[in-house]
Length: 197
Image (cartoon, rainbow, N blue to C red; front, side, top):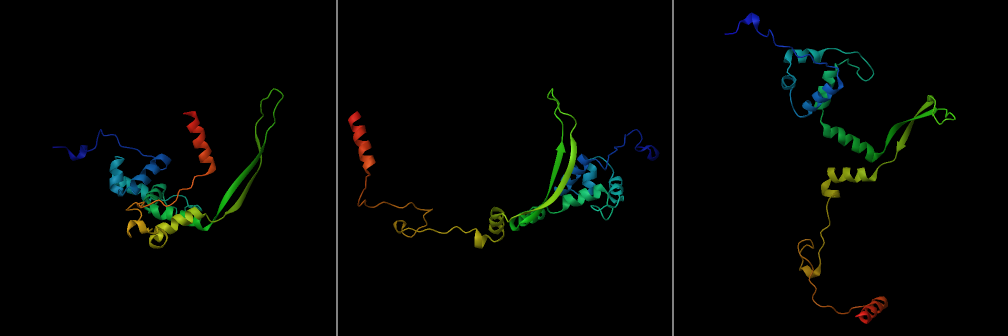
């Protein structure tokens, strides 16, 4: 029987960098796959208490992080946010037109007589907002998926030769050929081929 005072001695503790980008991306992926906090902690071989303490630890309040949440907490929330809603919102924005920011940097460098370039000097960086017009492909995709009964129906085609069946189910039958027209070029081609035999 193990002594309670010696439990855990000699076992190296796992030290995780809870600000490492790669670690946070992995956590986000596990959260997206449906793992809860305890399961994610077990995957990284840390105690759930340590994981929870780092999750609730406060971070610096910034414009992007007004609540001062830890990076771990934000990665978990981002992973658990329905991804389909995010994609849906992006598609809707593109379908209805949107504004994007474009950054243009003007730089200057000097070419020496031997062909080498001197250090590049950035003169100015211009940021501007560009209005993208509505994208018809995105709009069609949106409508076909959100109102399939209205926008995704293929018309049913009928033909008299199929006895009222759908054209996709039965091929039309040719009963009788009334008249065949051959162009002058086809006749000339036929004469040339015949004379070669």
